[in-house]
Every structure is written in C-alpha cells, then in structure tokens.
Image (cartoon, rainbow, N blue to C red; front, side, top):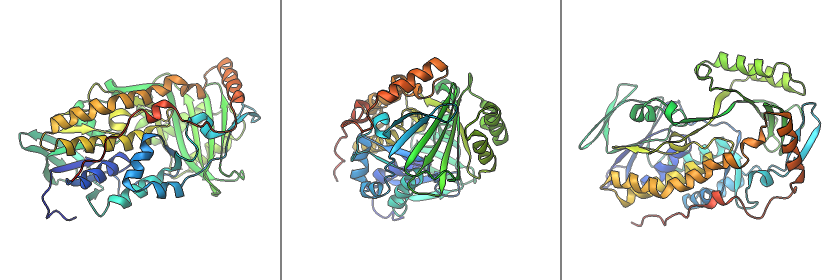
Length: 400
C-alpha cells in the first residue's frame, strides 16, 4: 500500500464482508489511509443469492463494479410455493414478490459481490486477516487499538462493519440485547447436491411455523438449502454451539414430509452450515467518540426485507462521504452520516411490517391467506420497485 502521499487520516475498518470493503474503497478514493481487519483467514464467500436494489445499484455504478454484477446476475425465473404435501400452492416471478425492478436491480451469489468488492480495493488499502480488535482506548489524538494478535496501533477513527453480532459494537456500546430486535424466527442455510434437476428457480415449502427452500443458482449441480422456523425466544445458547443448532433444527422439522428428511441429512453433513436468528439491529445512535458503525452492525434489516446488502453499500457510501466532507471533525462527520442515512435505513427496516414476515405464516389460516394473495400476483415483474429501495438520493462524490 502506498502511504507516501499526504493522508486525510487513518481509519481502521473491522470486517471484510460487504460494508467493510465498500467503505474502504470510498475512503481510499477520498485520500484516507485505510486498514481492514477481518477475523477470518480470507474473504468469506457463500454462494446464496443476495439482492442489490434501488439506490445501492447507483453506488455499485459509481464504484465501477456494476458491469461485473450484471454479468453475475442470477436471473431467477420462478418461485414455486409448495404446501405441506409438496403440491404447488402458487408460482410467481421472484421480482413480483421482492419488489425489484427487472433490468435494473441485480441478484448475485453473495460470494460474487464479496469477491468483486475485495478485488476492487485489495491493492489500495491494507488488509489484515486472521485477526480482530481486542481493545479500544480513545484519547484526544486518536484511538489506540490492541489486536487479538497482540499488535498495537493508533488510528484516527475506527469503523465497525462486522455484522449482526458486531464485536466492535459490543466493545463500545455494550451487550447486543438492547439493540437486538428479534423477529420470531431462526434459520439455517447450507449447500447440498442438486439432485432435483432445478435450474434458475426457487422452491419454497411451507407448513405453519416452518419453511424450507431450495435455491438453484443458474445451472449449478449445487443447491442452497434454507430452513426457517418460528421460535418464541432467541436461542442465545445455540448461537455459540453448532451441535445445538443442528439438534434444534432437526428436532423442529423431525415430523415433516416432502424432502425435509433429505434436507436434514444434508444439513448434518454440510461443511458450510450457518445458523442465526431472524433479527434487526435498532440503535438510537450509530457512533460514539471516534467509533462509528455501518451495515448490519448498526442497522441490520434482516433477510425478510431483502435489503441487507443494499443498506451496507449505501451506508458505506454515505459514511465515507461524510468523513471526506468533514475530514477534520469526526464528530460532525458521524452526525451528518446518521442524519442523512437514518430515514432511508428505517424505511427499509420497516418493510418487515409491510409483508416481509407474512411470507412465513405461523397458522393454517394465515398460510391459506398468503397463498391466496400469491395466486393473485402477476407472474410478470412490476415496472417499479418499492419506494423504500430508492428513498435516498446519493450526494455527488466529494471532489478532489
């Protein structure tokens, strides 16, 4: 990394998923010296589909990565809803349900987006893998960081882009629970062989309180499997115990038919299972002193909104823009970032209350009502997306 030219300041970014590399890109472009620390040994992929919609598409265009994302666009052709016996309940176009705009918004494997972001910025900023922040000590002239490896360094500001269960957030704001808004579901995702002949499509099976999905990304011989279920309280103990996670999922789906037994067997043998709660992060403020949060660490919307990646990209752009505009006053920068971004974030988080959770009914009556609504949808995508997706107009990049 070339640090010979004058820098507007030094920034440590915790997290190398989506928000972290995105904010690092913009900060480097604006003249900051950036270090990204990631606890994993490399950029974490995962091929399950994610969406980039609305304002986030413009962020991708300004970064120069939109052509790559369009090349990777999955173009799922249909979403088939199945009842408990595996019979078709409804067939819709995915965009008709998600509120995306055909020809504008993109759906890509998550690993494609993380790889593109990393490749775009890896030669411009410093990446430190297999390490993480251990302690933070702020003073008048910066913030001293001790890393898990024992290394000590000082930065002007620290940005937490380390996800729903952000360690940076816990160091600065305390335990997660006050900010964790549990939405009543847990989920597990993993890959399994495509023995069903699926292509460019999704199967979504439902019974009250439980759902399973099979995502066929293009013509792959691999499927992304998803198991989702209602659970009255967050199973915090299982979040730290992979065996307990598998046991909880298996017990919940033990008596179900269709292909559920095969999915449970595949989950047991998968080498990439991921388990978590369906939750949002809602915080009264996203910064404290020289530390600010972005992406899921600050405002996770949950997958029910389909907007996690988009909020990460837009938030990264807005935070970097504010720091560049107020490069000598981090407090002012963080204030402007939150003032200009919070409304957009909250509109997208509120999509959960406008039908997101209704995809996974917990009663037989609600399930039948959902299926009736789905059957009334056109199989063609709408001409325009949801207003929340484009509710923020990006400021122009900072000149010079």
